[in-house]
Length: 315
Image (cartoon, rainbow, N blue to C red; front, side, top):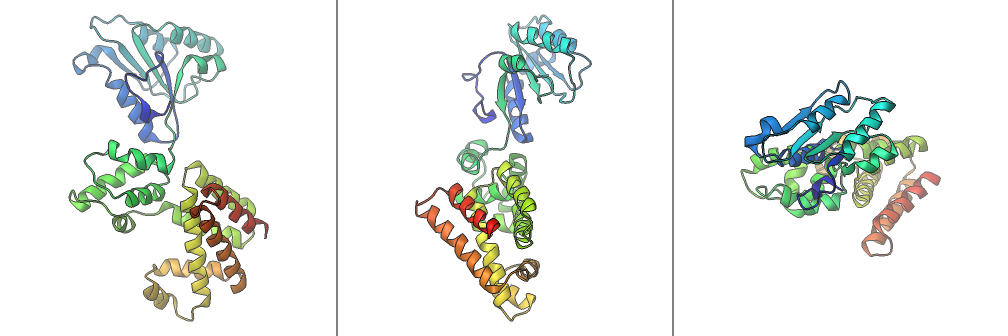
């Protein structure tokens, strides 16, 4: 179950494992469970364990009798504690005997065996795909107005990291004074984390360092950066490199003529110097053909991207 899908009607069982690489979704899930306890009962019915001394701490917290007519919620935030084999068996016993308490564990060190994983409902706090995030942003931030294209760009700039997206949206809301956030606002106010890695990728391809290129690509994929975004970014970078290679203008002059940052022009020239002009043209043709193929429905964006990049790695 994804953290975003949590609701009173979707809960299955009483033991939960929250695991993933996006702190926003971890905190989102924990806030949901904390919200199950009425504020007036929280002092006794909400128990948060930041550091475990033993699994007995969990047993004590979940089995303590409450005088209030509400379930106890026990949250174990300690992600480093590694239980002994005896404690794993004890935790399995605790998870199976929960009747008036919810147990929520963060991280996988405690819930590490197949039997424990079966006993705990897993809540996915990983980064979501860009199209999934774009669809739910209005619900998550109902008081922030953002154009769909701006949302898509922001998501990719932040590598689908909702913690980063949330921080940027708060800043953008203040910048726009409640107005609608546009794509231009994103490009002006938000640093594109993916852009620097595109520079790294084109440099690795130029040096024929396939191991490094695959490492960067794997990083993009693990962060759920959209294939369409990566393909468009590569097209833009190689187009910039070709312009830089062909133009007699200085970096400053070319920057002024194209509206591209002078540093970006300089980096494009450095990368372009590792290719012949004919090779740059061939690469750009390959990338633009791939972009056309997915936009026209001939290929999925993933297939188009991988086909084009494989050609660059092989040739």
